[in-house]
Image 1: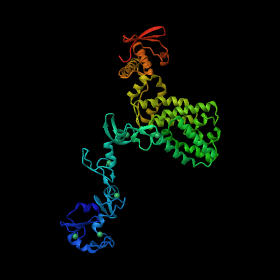
Image 2: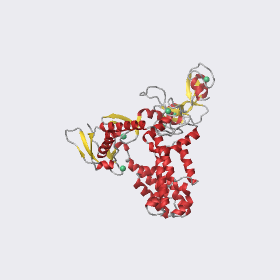
Image 3: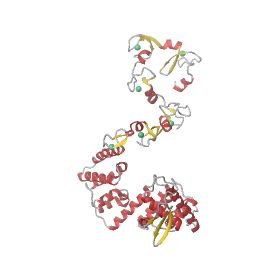
Image 4: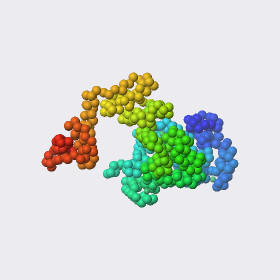
Length: 479
Ligand SMILES: [Zn+2]
Ligand SMILES: [Zn+2]
Ligand SMILES: [Zn+2]
Ligand SMILES: [Zn+2]
Ligand SMILES: [Zn+2]
Ligand SMILES: [Zn+2]
C-alpha cells in the first residue's frame, strides 16, 4: 500500500481488511488497522525492551511497545526524541531529522522543486509550505558589513546582521586586524589566504621536480603581490596545468622556444599570466616582437575579462578574428582594435547572450565615439551576414553628435554640482575641464589644467582661468 492512497483514505479505511468507513484504532508503519484487524495482528507478548506484556505486531519478533518506542533516541542523530518526533519504518526520528531525511520529498510552493524539510512560515504573505532555500530568499540579505547571507535587522547604521550589530568590530583571531564580528572565524582576507595556502600545498604534491615545485610557489607569491588573495584563490587552479606539463616534460621550466613549441600560441595564450611572471622575473628571454605580442594578448584578455560571460556574438566574432590571425591575414593589434568598440558597445548597453545591438544603440554609441566607426564596421558587417540584419554603421550627423555631447557634459556637471562633500583634487580639475568644454567649447586635458593658474575671490561666484594667454570665466564648484 503506498503512502498517498493510505493518506487519502485516512481515518476511515482499514489497510488490512480493506473495509471503508471503519474506525481506525492503530497506525503502524504507515498502515491503518481497524479494531478487528488490530486484535488479529497485534497479539499479547513481552516487549523486547521493557519485558512487559503488551500488544505487539505479530510479524515482528523483536518489536518494542509504544512506551519504550517513545523513549528511544532519534535513530539518525541520537538526540532525545520523546516529544515532537515521528515513527518511521526504521525507528523513531526527531522532528528535524524526520523533516529532512525521512519524509518523502514534497513540492515547494515557490520554486516547484521536490524537496524535504518544507515548512510554512508565519511572516510570509502566503501559508503554503516552501523549501529552506526559498525561505532564505525572503528573509536573508547580504550583510553590508560582513558580506554573509543572513537575516538582517534594522539598526541606526542601516541593515546589519545580528552579530555585526551587537558586537560591531572585533579582532580577526588569525591576523588580529579589526573585522566585522559577523565574519566569524576569520576575516575575508585570512579566509582567502588560508584557502589558497591549503590548495597550493595540495597542488605542490603533484610535482616530482623540486624546481617546478619551487617555481610554482614563487609564481603564486608573485601573483598575490599583483592582485590579492581572493583573485588568486579563484584563478590559480587554471595555471596548475602549465606547471604539470613542465614537470612531466622537462622537470623544470624551460626556455621560451621550448614552451612555444610545446604549448603552441593558443596554449600559451591561456597561460598569459604565467608568461608575464616568467618575463618580469627574467626567467625567460624573448625578442621584442614576441614581447609586444604578449602585451597585446593581455590587452585582449582584459577586454574580454570585463564581461561576466562573454556574449555569444562577441565570442564568435572573436573566434573569426583569431582564425584570421592563424591564417596570417591580420595582426594581434588589429584584432584588439576591432574588438574594443564591440566590447564597449556590448558593455554600454548591457547586451548579453546572443543579443545583437539595435540600430539606435549603434547610433548612440557612435554619436559619442565617432572615431571608432571604422573599427566597428567589421563587426556590424559580420552581424548583418550571419543574423540577416540590415544594420548600418554610420556616424550620426554633426548636429546630433554635438547635442549628445552637450547632454553628456551637462549630466556630469550636474553630478559634480550635486555632491555634498567638497570635491577631491581630481574632481576639481574635472570640473574645470567640463566647464571649459561646456561654456567655452575648449577641449583641455586634465594634465594641462593642473598647471593652469586659477583665480577666485571669496565673495565671487565665478572663477577665472588663464589658459593660453586668454581669460575664461567659469562658475565655482559647489555653488
Ligand atoms: Zn481491518
Ligand atoms: Zn516496552
Ligand atoms: Zn534526530
Ligand atoms: Zn523552494
Ligand atoms: Zn554581518
Ligand atoms: Zn584576518
